[in-house]
Amino acid sequence: MDFKAKVIHHGAVNGVTGSCHQLVINATTSVLIDCGLFQGAEVSGKSASTGLAIDFDVSHITALIVTHCHIDHVGRIPYLLAAGFTGPIFCTEATASLLPLVIEDALKVGVTRDKGLIAACLKLLKQQNKPIPYKQWFDLPVNASANLNIKPQTSDSNRSVDFQQAKAKFQPAGHILGSAYVEIDLVLPQNIILEKPLDTPLVKGLSNLSDKKPDKPLTNKHRVVFSGDLGAPYAPLLPAPKSPYRADTLIIESTYGDKNHQSRKLRRQNLQRVIERAVADNGVVLIPAFSIGRTQELLYELEQIIYQQHKTQHKSQQKMASQSSGKHLKNSLGADKSVWQTIEVIVDSPMAANFTEQYKKFKGLWDAEAKQKVSKGRHPLNFSQLYTIGDHKQHLSVMKALAKRNKPAIVIAASGMCAGGRMMNYLKQFIGDKTTDILFVGYQAQGTPGRDIQQFANKFNGYVELDDKRYDINAAVHTLSGYSAHADQAGLVNFVKRMHHKPSHIKIVHGDEEAKQVLQSCYQTILPDAFIEIAE
Ligand SMILES: [Zn+2]
Ligand SMILES: [Zn+2]
Image (cartoon, rainbow, N blue to C red; front, top):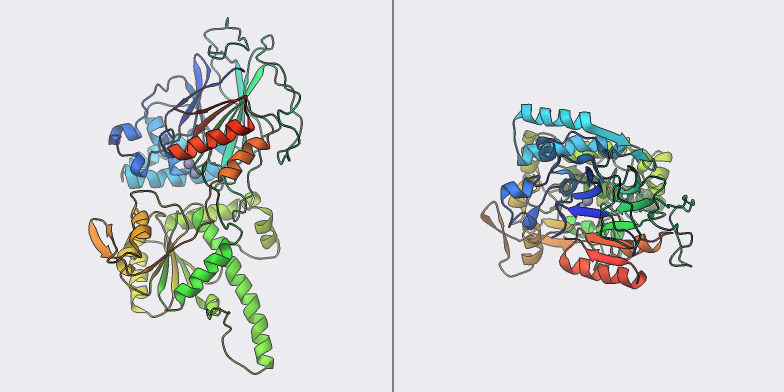
């Protein structure tokens, strides 16, 4: 068996949150990959302090590499800084742009309202943050090894190796704006050979979507790939991730290791159909959505539907005018398509609005379809019926206005699992109303109000508790699959299958027990000689 890189996990091993992995480079150097918060049910069982704490020695941590700025990957950064970490924080340029917004929000919501403390933390973050473009190698700081005499032998997989150099590269992961998987090359002095160069792929004849530029043989190098969170194909806005050319050790997420997504290609039609039916009674449609990623995907989809309907309507009006008929166009189900010309889409989240601006700023990272729309003069994240709500006063007046009037509207607000945020106020106000429709487009974790609403919506006397008060669910509740921001089982398997040089060692993280086990056996089937383990 080949040499195995040493990776210690400080999170995302008993669930999907708290991602924080320590790659040991030599006796005096380690780098961290992500430093995320534990969330939801995964916090329970940990005391508040251990859930947040940096309970490991940071004195040998020379750098932090951030894969993307979801809170479960970056939320413990303030605690890392407080623990005395002074090294560089590497991330992509888009992530660097989003990161201060995410950290500021996390501090305000979970830690402190003290402006001085927040400013001090953001200042450190800015000083230490090093944005790096995708696909560009950068050096990682490596302390001189304390133990230069160790000469690794390929036969002994358990001894530690003192690497002298390390470099890293970000590749697009297609999960949220700025997201990346990271390739890290660990390099030994020239005279030490770690393993024989691999010159033929382990599995032949598989289609390969990765860039096939041949690397130099890695005679004294070991390439470790951290997947971060991988996106799924057919996602709106961002291109799907391509497999790396090579990995010797792979640390991979497994959120959907045991599931394949359904109906991704039909999801836009499904979204349109549900909304058309929902607004027929002039009620509000509530869509709980996370402010980063999901909100922008929804705006992108709604813009497309409105654009398409506008075109169709325009054509049919011309036709009707020539036949002197003035009736609204209805589809075979009787849904009134003209609603798309007037319906208001309300994004009630200042954070989401900030993130949408960042998505617009980094148009260069969008996929081909989105770029084509821009080149035709369209604004895929904006349309005339879109309203963004700012401060709390505005939020309250919109709620009041919506309650009084008899006109449909779509409201997108956080949190995505109804566990806080302005969505809670909308639910309290509208969940008891029969004309309301609640539309779930994302995963609802166990123990969240979102999951309870899904579960009890169609039950007799179904209710949900919001802030310790009981609310009857009279609203119609819908769940749309197809919008997940994570690769499914096929995506995770293809990520490995399409590598030119496949890993001899895979560690599975970031998933529920069942998902990890199923994925482990998938990998073992395609790589029978590799060491596939579930990280502990
Ligand atoms: Zn994520
Ligand atoms: Zn994650």
